Image 1 (cartoon, helix red, strand yellow):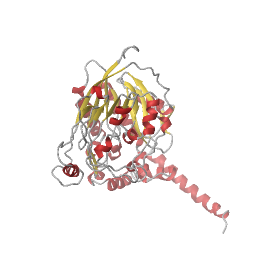
Image 2 (cartoon, helix red, strand yellow):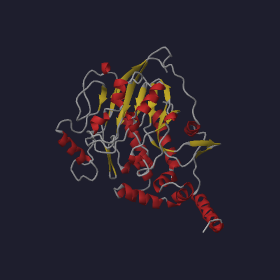
Image 3 (cartoon, helix red, strand yellow):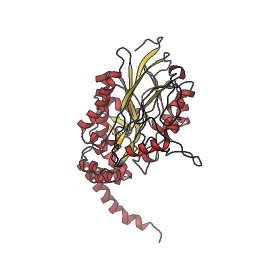
Image 4 (tube, one colour):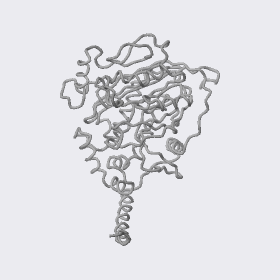
Length: 428
């Protein structure tokens, strides 16, 4: 770590991977998929300076498919969710009964402890093996508390959460996504929004890191909060669930929707173009068709115009300064109508020869910042619990199936006993 008076010089690396359902069917496949991203980043790592590697949003969400070979074969999200719920009903049904959550939330919570442990231990091993500051992307994760050598989730909430690890595999911090898209809400994967006041900034040798997951980087309240906390490097892990050249799906009422790449300029690029505090932003985007869902985009690293004088921009937008690194889209030239057509050809179930032939890749940029004047804020109870798991001081052995069902049967019997009594007090 540089001395306090020295500038921080480091390399930022953004990985744009391609995913598919088969990458998540076993623990070994998931580990290979994650490791392949760090292996792709290896040639871009600086040999002498610290490296900051940023992965993509919700790269742990498809772990719900683990072991669900038949579900993955349906190639439909809703059908797969139904089959998975049946497959894991012994674990999910008591959660449905006791915690009064949706079937989709119950399905995720049924094995969330083992998925969280797999995700964190995989990322910890990669951070240590490659010696990088690793922004793990994000994954659905509850808030945990430590009870002796066991971790237990606080409640039935499930956040879209980013975890940052140091090169030795220790925890730097966690951040929850504040603004959820409709696909992340009750009608989709049913996640829980984080709270604006929970956002923090993490001082490190690779910047004072603030996380704005996907939609959060478009929202002034999140950006302003991170600026007030002293953020100098904005991290925007992303999973854009629509064709890249389609019209934007989220826009103010009464406003005409724009081409999505044009709308995307209002996130990382706009932040670094106008913020007096946030100097750089790193926005990796995942691509690929996951069942019947399509993900596409252009990963980018943005910063001061003086450091990126060569004008360039997303496809379908005019060149401009501020892009330090930008991954090209699959086709750079054509009319808007032609480019929109290509986006639809790439999408799931298009039947076109170009289906699922997205562009993956890795970007890097060398960044420099003045010394940090910030001090780390104390870790919260959840971060302390995650640290204990990563350090081997605690584990998350979930309750047995038998214990789940004993609680369910006890609840049903209690309901039968109390229901007649409750009726006596009712007016007719």
